[in-house]
Image 1 (cartoon, rainbow, N blue to C red):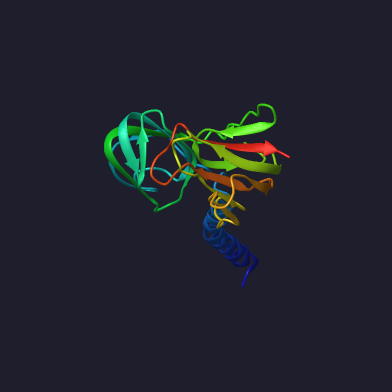
Image 2: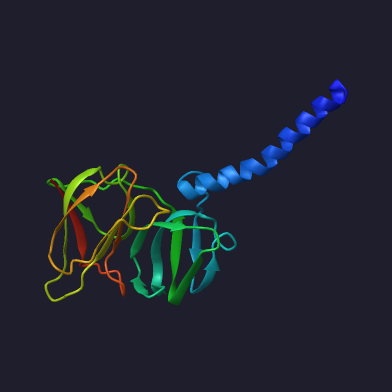
Length: 206
């Protein structure tokens, strides 16, 4: 093999490897941290079924109901209700029923401002520790109208792509001590059936 042919062979080999490895590397980065290469867009949706990657771009979104009444899966939502930090992966399905409109916008990851050392979560969704909530030890509890017996469902995930390491349903006591680590995701579901405006989840720094 001449020197010129050898150089051409090496160049073609490198190009082939790049064509194979770069997409794999990008896919790996996305799977490990969806915030990397986040392609979330602003979009308005009505009742119907939508496929992520086809009808809406992959990404992490904040969602707000802008008109009417809708059900997001089995959760009833009304105008003004919000769900924070929804991680939409390729081929995920979104289902909306009812008469209304929701607006999805790229997640803002706004920090929650404490009052008297208490962080108040007003909306269901996913919150990143270290970015929206400081890492540390907390007493986790909630408030709700006295006439209601509904309870929130809380999960702590190592990352957006991992299964929960802790699940709390407030079945046996009204408050739990938790330790949140940087990079973890705190997910809050006020109730399975609806987004209750009268419920707030509280994190008191220990």
